Amino acid sequence: MNKSAVTMDQIVSLAKQRGFVFPGSDIYGGLANSWDYGPLGSLLKNNIQQAWWQRFVERRRDMVGVDTALIMNPKVWEASGHVETFADPLVECKKCHTRFRADHIDTDKACESCGESGQFTDPAAFNLMFRTFIGPKEDAAAQVYLRPETAQGMFVDWPLIQQTSRKRIPFGVAQIGHAFRNEITPGNFIFRTREFDIMELEYFIHPDTWEEHFDAWLQEMRDWTALCGMAPDSLHEVEIAGDDLAHYSKRTVDIEFDFPFGQEELYGLAYRTDFDLSSHGEASGQDMAYTDPDTGEQYIPHVIEPTFGVNRTFLAMLVSAYTEEKVEDETRTVLRLPAWAAPYKVAVLPLSKKEELTKIAEPLADELGEHFSVDYDITQSIGKRYRRQDEIGTPYCVTVDFESLEDKQVTIRERDTMMQERVPLADLPAILQEKLS
Ligand code: GAP
Image 1 (cartoon, rainbow, N blue to C red):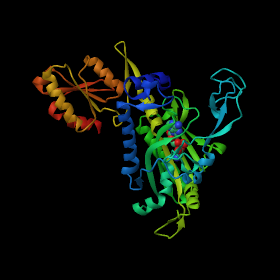
Image 2: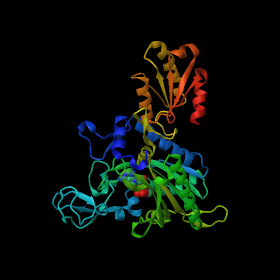
Image 3: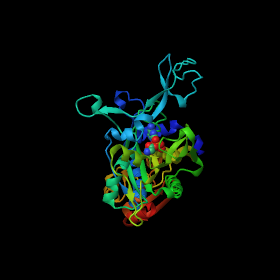
C-alpha cells in the first residue's frame, strides 16, 4: 500500500476500535484534543519509551538519566527565556471570535470557522505556558508554570548531576516526561495536543567540538527512525533558518515526516550553545562552569539537544506500519510494527473453547507470558482472530488444535507472510525467543 495513501481516518478508526487511543473524557462528550492511550496504546507507548531509554541511556557509558519535577521555580522560566519569548502569534476572527495561529492560516482569506473575510485582529503574542498556583492563595507570588519542555530540569540540575555522576565531558543527560503547552490550534489527532511526552537529551560538550557532535547526533536520530520502521523517503531534514530559529539555538535541523495531513515536524536537533547554563548561572548566582580534570581548563559547557516527541513517534509508527492488502478477495489490514514495539509479541489461540484445548493453551500462555507480552483469545473463528492480531501488529500467533493433543506440537503463524510452521510444544519458548530477538 502506498504510504501517502494511508489516511488519518484509517489510523484514527483503527486506534479507537482496537484500543490504542480513545477520545479523552468520552462519556462526558470528550474534551477537545484530549486523548487517552488504551490497553494497546499504553503498551506501544511504553515500548517506544523503553527502547529509547535502553538505546540512549542504558547502553551508553556517556549518558545518565534523570526524572525532574514538572513544576519548577518560576525563575527557571524567566532565565530560560520562556516567559518572554515562548509565544505563538494569535489572531481572532472579529465575527465568530475563533482564535487561530497567525502562521497557520492566510489572514487575507475567509475565516475557516464562519466564512467571513478580512475580519482578523492584528497578531498578538500568546504565551504557551500553562499557569497555575501552588497552595491555597491564587496570587502572583504563588503563580507557577507547568513545564513546556523537560530540558530545563536537566540544565538547572547540571552541577549536581555532574558532581554525583562524576561524568567527564562529553556526556549527556536524558529524560522522558510530560510537557504542557497551551497550543492555540491543537489538532490532527495526537500530533499537536496540549499535553504530551518528550524524550530528550542534553549532550554537554566543549564548544570547539559542537559540529562533530551535531553530526553524530543527527546520525543517531536517523538510525532511531529506521529502528522505528519509518521509511527514509518519508523523512526530511530541514535546516531552520533566521527568525524561525528558537531564541536559544545557533543551529537547528528539524526531522519532518510525511504524515497523512502533510510534511510536519517529528523531531528536532538543536545546538543550544551555552545559552541555558549561562543564563541559569547568571540568574541564580551559581557556578555552572566545568573544569577539565586533565587540562584544568574552565568553561561553561555547550549543549547539543536531540529531542523526540513520544506521541509523534507513536503516530509516525502507526502510519508507517499500516498496510492493507488483498487476500482471497478480502482486505487484510496489517500493522507491520517492528517486533520490539508490538503491544503483544505473541497471541495464543486455541482452535476451540473446549476444555481439552484450553487446558493446554492457558498454561502455555502463562509460560510464554514470563518472556513476552502475550494475548490470549478464545472467541470467534480462527480466521477472524488471526485478522484481529494482524490489525494490532502481533508478530506471531500460536494455535493449539486437536492434533496438538496427539503430537504435542503447535502451529506458529507469522504476521507479515502468514506462513505457518508446526513446532514441538516443548521447544516453543526457545523458538519464539530466537525469532523475536
Ligand atoms: N527542548 C526542546 C523542545 O522542547 P520542541 O521542538 O519545542 O523542542 C520537542 O519540542 C518535540 O516535542 C517536538 O519535536 C515534537 O515531537 C514534540 N511536540 C512539540 N509540541 C507538541 C505538541 N503540542 N503535541 C505533541 N507533540 C509536540
